[in-house]
Length: 202
Image (tube, rainbow, N blue to C red; front, side, top):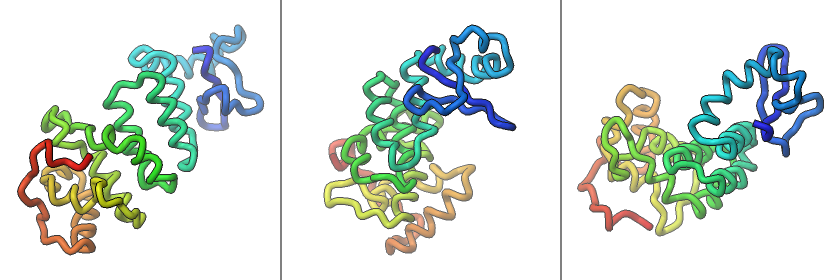
């Protein structure tokens, strides 16, 4: 917990890593913080995260969430080095894509973890991705990202997966997927024969 700082705003609390310490912020283990409103709120919010993932991963997750888009890649690298579980890293990679950062660099480092985020509700098999992955690949398309010849493109994604099932309960994703399919010249639904594992782009 000594790696985390808290800053109280008028209506919320901001938790950050020491490297992003704001003037007037307090270290959680400073004695006069431990029983005040800030300290208690910090423990309430952060304790479950620390309990589940440990201090290092929790601190990096908090720092990553506070980082602007252009600084997400260093945060993702630190999160990976901190030993974040595969699904946590995959989720954060997907949440970083198509947000205005260096998507090419993020994909160069983390394309496999991003695509390997399974949809636990449908299947634990990475071949059945989470809606978070669909959302990320739609954002990349909407931002006009140019995929390389061997990259897993939005076109490939839409052809490979049952998008209507993936977007179930998310009408926003379905609308965006239909729009992307139309722009890419795909009939709806765009799903074709599903390739085997060894056919996935590397």
